[in-house]
Image 1 (cartoon, each protein chain N blue to C red):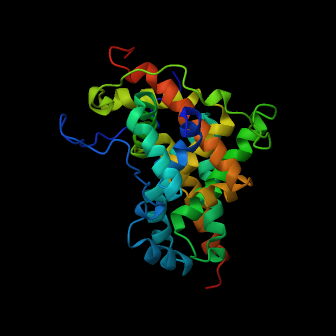
Image 2 (image 1 turned 135 degrees about the vertical axis):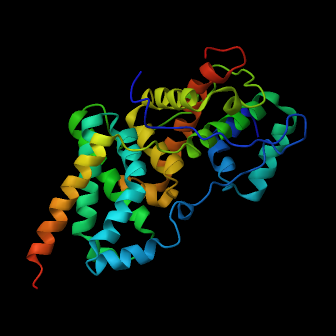
Length: 229
Length: 83
């Protein structure tokens, strides 16, 4: 098992079993703006004026999330730590260039993702490419379809869920994983994800679709009723 | 819309980004296809469990190294700044 310490599941309240709920109704994801606290822009402004404590506060606030991001992309502890460190140092060095047309956190995610991607490409030069087109629908068909029961999230303890998520994302191919991580874990928009990765919006969507279906397939092994726990 | 069509649109459907006519077509299919409904619900749950995951605290030694590097950088910059 790899890196089981970097994703932690949060237990959420679910509607009571037995009551009707709109299982298939669209549920657009929250925007990345929910990530940042309201005073972020004040800290950024103070840091730009040279207040080092303000910048340290920003680091304290986001270091765990940025490390999770770099870990999720690289799946290598040393690379993840280097990428995180360089991301914070670069963000400090270039703070004056930050135009505040997006959240500081989103800007930081872009820098950290690029640092992590650079290291991933270096470590896996022949295994990671976002240039390959994806064609055909054959791999979309679910191979296994089983009932997951009322709520897998409540069946597993937090640490157990954390290990499951870490294990399944580790098995996802890097070119699908990075798209999924930026879009669904960091909650960047499709356009922002495309910009960070230097690929088109349709390419992001295509990889995201496959990443989600592949992860569903992998989670089926753990979440199916009476399945392997 | 058939099952293959649902799979192609599932991501945009979950994100609420489908055109109304396609969304309605997809939902008509879900009304009578239990398998597709299960895939849609499980895919949404897959996204939710990751989306709701929160990072654990940074390991102590990683945090120390980060803040040491940061302080060095901050001090460097402070020294360069004219008094």
